[in-house]
Image 1 (cartoon, rainbow, N blue to C red):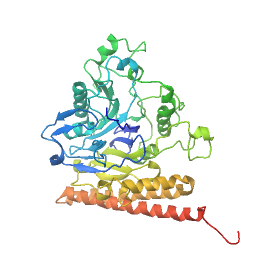
Image 2 (cartoon, rainbow, N blue to C red):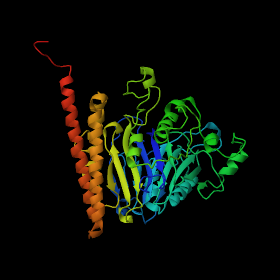
Image 3 (cartoon, one colour):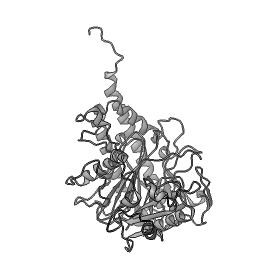
Length: 469
């Protein structure tokens, strides 16, 4: 079979009563198996949506309905590797991020093997997001597709509308389960099976019609009471203690410092609650994190060389793009969907709040090239991160100022745009122009930061000579 590029992402979900402004939030770092898989930000209008879809990485194909919705997405910029649309918000203000690659175990795979010609991460947003009008409907459509066609990998997928946030996990070849995240809760999900306690009779769960019977008939449940799906279908490997669990631990400790847990705990909670309302800035900070203020920070001064390499961080050189999909409840529906976006490793970028209800996306984010081009945000962001990594401590203060100022300036522009929206004859054109202004602001500030980094680094070059030394 064709070699697949599998992501190793980190996901955060926030219910509307847990967020600072009453929004629902689903967010994810899209990570590649290696650095530099160029990404772009596009709007797919109904006339551009395929009516027949053919996967690149498998033989899966499907005829699609004739009534698609428009939607934003962040697909691959290089043709030939498949679409990998990754995430977006459709014109009904339904958000989807797909996918978080997750683990499973040999017990369930021995019963329901993966399907080589099934669907996968490459396909899911394109065949789901344009056809759903609520988060629950997204769960039901994707679940039906997985049941019928099967999948060649196991993944976590998130859906949100203005009221509900859902987390969906595929289970082996043809099975799946999904949980509605409580309004007052949040989730940090790494690359392992994440759903724990599951009530088959709840209105806030959905799953394959035969999932309970599959567990019971095949004696898959290791617990004497209840159904913990992570115990039943997931892994608890030594790799999890180095690659997955520490990321969930760090995110949970940020939101709940009182948690008495360790990075290697195998039973970290799935659904969490914090007394502090969660902001977009909080989500970005966690998705950019690298174990700051612990011995495990590769840029920090606390740990040994071994400790700094012990655990896989959330912010990493394989971050391709970060999206925070926000559905606001304090504005009219036409303004509600915000596709926050940043490209490249998250140590040296800023996340920009792009309106989803537009005619097009900004050229610097849309027209990513296959080859290096610092006039495009994907490449400029990767340049800043690569340069910044050479001496993180030297550049850290400038990066913090850049990020705070850029987000503050975009928020100010957003407030102005929201306030004047009701007076616009062509609202989509107005929001399209607002996005262009924010993209220009991001590009200008990024170049300013890069210039500051050059000024700081130039005097430290080894290639220098002073006659009187």
